[in-house]
Length: 123
Image (tube, rainbow, N blue to C red; front, side, top):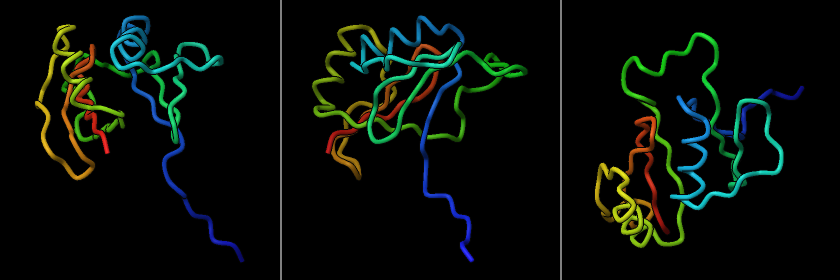
């Protein structure tokens, strides 16, 4: 008999206040590329190995209560975290932690338009 088992994350999305603003942030500031197809109310990016999206809030979700994503850590890999950090500073993006040597290489933490803390690292 086969035992059912979860193999790991297969899709990640953030619920956001303004889909256009958030999609533009992840596209223009972080360089993510939009996937050609997305469900209504979402923008999916062609990230690997796991697809990532921003989407309108699900019914009953209040994004104005509490800290966005409290308890969830989102890490994105970058080919040059230090260079991206400098570009984001120049663009006025809020940086929560400047680059440091972390378990996956140079690492820093930014804040996206909805207040999510996003960790970026390079191997």
